[in-house]
Image (cartoon, rainbow, N blue to C red; front, side, top):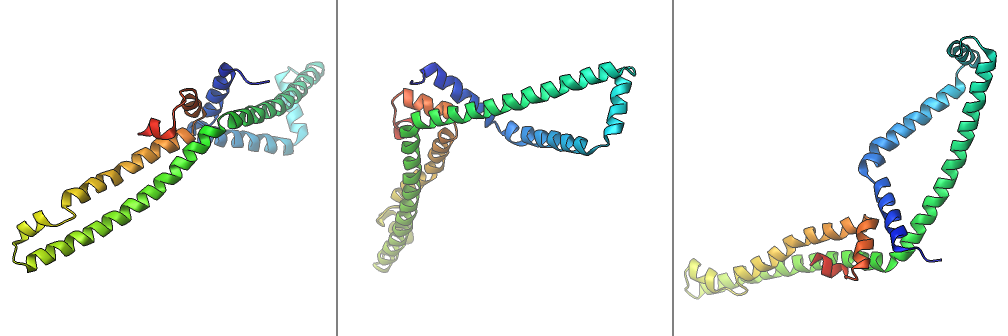
Length: 202
């Protein structure tokens, strides 16, 4: 059964939120610290732990046992819930990855073409600069002043500058492509608009 657009949007928002840098860094660090403390407590003397529980429950053995049963039940429920949630998230991610495959592939291809464009422009600019300097030298040898040679040399400095400006714009376009690749929400929006990656980053 196909996912409804609203379901896909909800899933995309949740997966993007889980990828929030704050959760990926500080959240993961705190969870790891929590797990470490839990592992340390598992090695702690049980007699001392039992004594603390007795103190918390005003010396009532009945209350201690009831408290422990509740904690065991809570831990079992949490373990089961985490397992189910992990499975749900994996299915959710697969559904989104499958639904967004055309857009993701198009964006990745666009990113690859940008690299090729950058390399091509760099090589072309280098070649044009070499040709420009060679033309200036030839014109100067023909008797023109440096200023005249510079203004008449082909390819012109403005032609080179135009390509240089185009080269400098590529990182911004590349950042836009990578930004969308890193977000389910933006890829879903892109696909719903039926726009190509080039149209959106032009």
